Image (cartoon, rainbow, N blue to C red; front, side, top):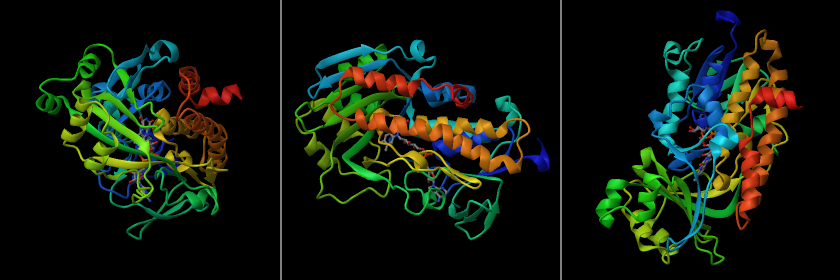
Length: 410
Ligand SMILES: Cc1cc2nc3c(=O)[nH]c(=O)nc-3n(C[C@H](O)[C@H](O)[C@H](O)COP(=O)(O)OP(=O)(O)OC[C@H]3O[C@@H](n4cnc5c(N)ncnc54)[C@H](O)[C@@H]3O)c2cc1C
């Protein structure tokens, strides 16, 4: 399809789901992304882990892990709060699932998605035109049946398809999923997170801790320092940007007397509070938390009961707007990238404007149960489960082969 026959697509939100969708659809459609914030907008954690279910798709979309300084994740290690290793296992992601697991700085990963959505087509070796991304002008209202979006500046934009990827606190969810649809709820855990550079670590500690050195050299693990005292406190550490940086996420039971941060994925945190809560942890870990120059971010973890529907008329919800889940399995963004890949159904030969509502229903039919299953296993494996159960969930999470395979299997 070319020119006037091409589907016009509006994507609401330039997060991970929105930009991945823009990359998929730009090959055949005219895509405009409206983002309410500035180009530097960032959501969620400092680091992010993408598992094989998403990396397989990203590779098909031209993802360049060199640009994101991605680190191969090769297994899991559990330590006690003093840093003694309790469990260590290599996990052969690539052999088992056909693609690696990678950790990277969230901002780098988002920048790579923005490149894939907007770079000249000849640079990516694909057809179609780059998506247009318009910042500082979000969606104030949408009319799913008419395919119309009212923007923050009061102007209106029309499209054949509206993909709503406006995150966990979606303004448009009720307009598509119904006025009484579920909304995100706190799960009782809070997550503080920082990124520390190797230079900062060396300056503060006189050298890298042994575990950092071993992550750098060979054993590229996700490390979980567990309190193991019934408090549920954990510190999750994994390398970023060629292991020159370390993501440190500290999870603990929410203290009810604190003000809620639930209206945002993150807010500024109080380092003194964090150090008090993890006072009995290894001194070097606490030093690393205190020397980080990045702003300490805090989020109360939230998820949402499954929606009954993701689509109405010409509009569809995807990403956290459709299926917010906690990061305890690190799958929210991966499932969002799977959602984006499902729009391949819209760029099949012969699809016309009239087919859009039916195809969006078809996408919902395959994607909603898949996201609900991962929400379920994220809840089940969040706390106090055996390694076996965690690995079973990993199989369910990582063995996804894209929308055409899902259609074939039904
Ligand atoms: C601490 C933490 C760690 C995490 N770690 C992982 C991990 O390791 N692996 C993983 O897979 N997932 C992880 N997640 C989950 C992951 O961050 C989310 O699932 C993912 O960001 C969802 O992408 P999204 O595009 O749906 O939403 P977002 O990334 O939140 O993007 C939404 C975008 O929409 C914009 N927006 C909002 N409203 C409007 C509007 N009205 N108009 C226009 N634009 C709008 C926002 O500004 C934003 O840019 C983590 C989450 C947290 C909190």
